[in-house]
Length: 150
Image (tube, one colour):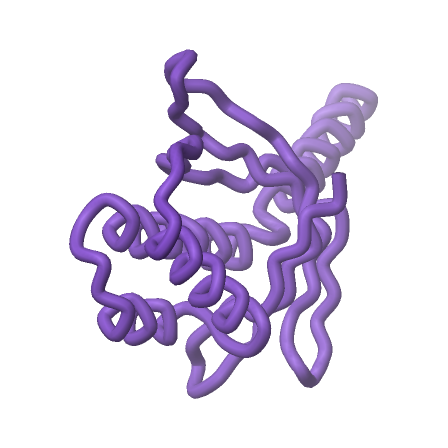
């Protein structure tokens, strides 16, 4: 009877530990996915809808800051001036978080992102590793850097 109780307790503790580990970065995953999917919506709206640069900048300022904002607006302006075909990003999900470091400036995350894409060959998924930096201002998170690692 004692052995069963001890085995049950060990099993319960192990299961609890595994479950808690899966929820470790839940808030960060939710925030990152929301910001990146909103970024996709804003960019696709600009690329495939009205090419209003002022509206684009206003919308991007709700989710981006610093270098990322400057890079995105520069690239999108160049694409608007010189249209070309490119693959369409339809959505993104966090595949795996390798590291997450909090600091006074914000959050640095090494993360694998699973992009849902569409191109001439149909829809496909693409997993890439990124270094993402975010800052928090007035209790809201903003993307400041998105650098592909591989």
